[in-house]
Length: 222
Image (cartoon, rainbow, N blue to C red; front, side, top):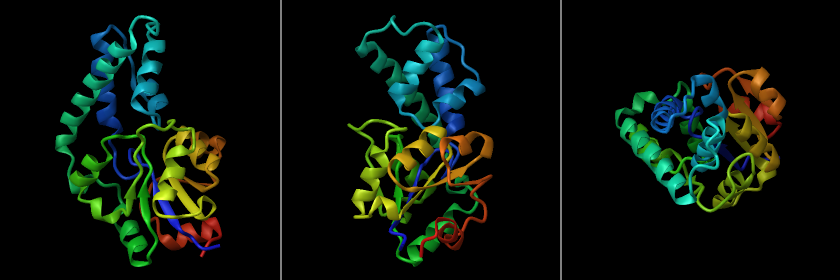
């Protein structure tokens, strides 16, 4: 079986923007009287903005307090703060090994695709100077968020790849579940105790030193 594409989550795989998400969500939550900590923030990884807001409101017992329009305003306020924080992002903020892996994929004609719930993916890739390394960016607009497989299926479709011939790389439980639901080989970046139970086929502590050869061998592809 020949590898047709590698699909990457963005936050936590390409770079660490989780810290910016946490700062922005924490500020928004505090503004409406809800306290969240870094442990709670782990439950927001891999899911989209409105799902994250709903979890925060439930956590603060305020799920019935706001109208849909008000919720959208809260989510937008969080995103505005997040985008402002991204101004400090630079090329050196890409995770170790990522640029080398992307170059290797490009040299071997294997499409690299972004499959992220983040609507700010183009902005982040531009700041990292990695836009040209990806053949496609799957638009999360209008489809169910992870753990639904839609974003990975959309990403594979953009490059004409058969999902069963694709590898997905994720750092979140919801993302791993989405990759598996899409019928792809799932590589987790993080802790085995967290990502293993979600169905990850192979878990790495980091992207440092990750190569195309290792991916092919692990997934039994060529």
